[in-house]
Length: 341
Image (tube, rainbow, N blue to C red):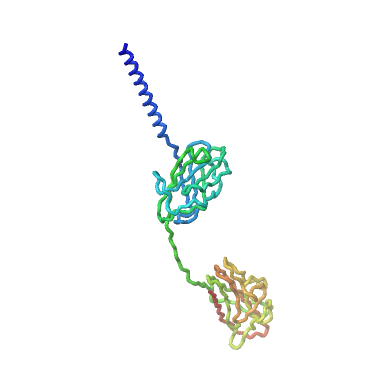
């Protein structure tokens, strides 16, 4: 009888021991359960310059469909272990760049800056679960002060608004970087070209107007632009000349005239307006259709500042009176472009 009682007690003890062991194993297993890892994690810095005040843009996919009410992004010197905030990092003035997308409700999320080194946001009473790719962006974040230094951001999401009950986690890696100063110099430039060396007016008669054109192009990086002037004499043959048009006038056949302008004309049909992407223009006295003039030393075109290239078409006309002496008439005109830097 004593032996049976002893066996029974031993059996009870054995069962108790097994149950206690099972409980311990069960407790151990539960204690090892970890929050799920977010995937497709990216962190985009508005600037990687050390100590810069910038934006931190997070993008990730959460594996859980648990409704969240808060999240924290702790900035650390290491990816795991004790989190030490990198020197110089500050979230004290951080704000949300915009409301998060796909974290839950579309509005009502606010930043909490009370924990140094951790970018935190929450919305008490959020009712929507995260879906798809979630984005969260913080502004006014100060980068760590060390240049070319890697740091890590440990994200944890929570089902409550007080950052207590963790749901999902994920780690982001980023780095500060140095700056490169790129230098270059631009020399002063003035480009001025003439397209041809001659302009033939043909055989002149009292009932016809001789006309011809030449072109020139100009551009500069001078802050005050450029002027183009013309100098030379009127058409001359020995001692004989065709009168230059000292005042603006229209072409008049049977009258001695030599003049130019820099626009398109209909009487006679000659010339073109200024072309090109620059800001240059024909000058006063040379910018009106069917009105001609020639005064040596006049400015015929100009640009008021640095400009891309413009092409000018110079129209030449000549008329003669019935008593104009026969001969071969010519002149040499010089165009000078002057830039003011």
